Length: 172
Image (cartoon, rainbow, N blue to C red; front, side):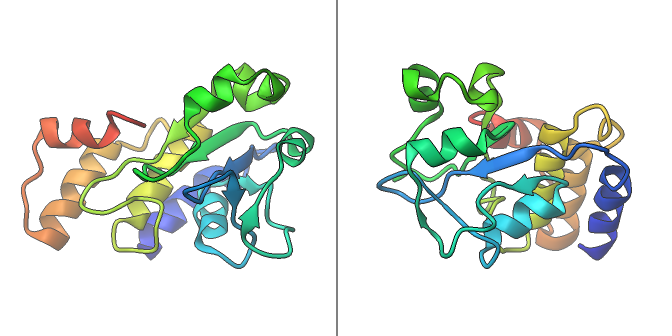
């Protein structure tokens, strides 16, 4: 994990304008995570700025706050109980001024053996995925399929197929 984190950091450290990211967590309303939670690690290790990092605590976010933060990218967990979807952001007029909505930069995090946006062995795959979402040009060298197959074979002793890998990314 440390080796892969260094690779991502070496590619993102020279980016002049890191993208602002809103990580929509929670299952009943729009909420997010401040600097004390995993969502912040997920974003910052990928080369992004967590727009919610100065919140006093993890919790509910108003629509007005999201508009004020104006994130470049919105990340949604692939949580079945999540009540807010990409369509909600795209179809509600009040979100129309947000850069991420205007540019359709709303992405669901892949789920494989486990969610890639949670502290787990697969978290490094999520960090690599998010770095490619945020900076596709700078991260074009990173072959996420190859990395995923290596990871599964090395740590789970499982030979991941192309179809299985593609299924991880279907919703994202």
